[in-house]
Length: 252
Image 1 (cartoon, rainbow, N blue to C red):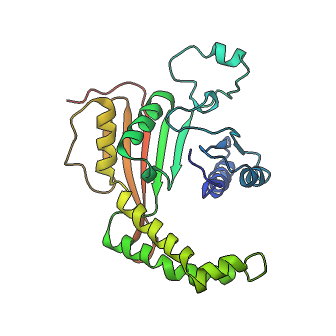
Image 2 (image 1 turned 135 degrees about the horizontal axis):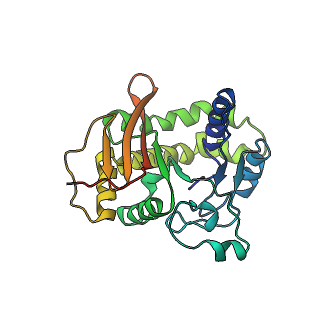
């Protein structure tokens, strides 16, 4: 969900399926979707892997189409299939790469409610966090854009406007830095993520959830927080991983 122009998903697909092939396991299908589909980029990505495809129509993460709903969820799906909607009957994992911080609490509740009702697992990946180190790194994005533009966009008549608004009037570096700074401030901690889950389930919020590797059970779901250093010495990727378990677990 919220795939944008593809982001890291094509690379994740190649890595995951390469490991599964080496282990002699069945390959996993990846499906790109977004409220504003980037079809040109997705067609290019899909042409490079038989395991990567996309939904060409706009997709609301809070109200997913039939193709993105797990067959394990309750409800009669016969009419949907008869109407021509296609599903491969595989279980569904929702993946949000650098996207979940875009949702305010109200939208996040709707997205997670849909996720818990119509999928089997969820992974939320965020490269930034609400910390001084991360905020400082996002401000450094201003200079990174200036440094990397000659490699990313070699000077030509086509890229001349980008160069003008990078070096002469540095609007592009300012936008990058501002976007990164705001993204840091909007990124939830694992405890705040679980608080949204608690809102969905009608529970009182738990204010003591913190730490890395923490596992929390909510109904028939288990959520774990993983944290990996992606840029030495102090920039981390957070992964909030949730999966549906066989039977509901009483929380008391």
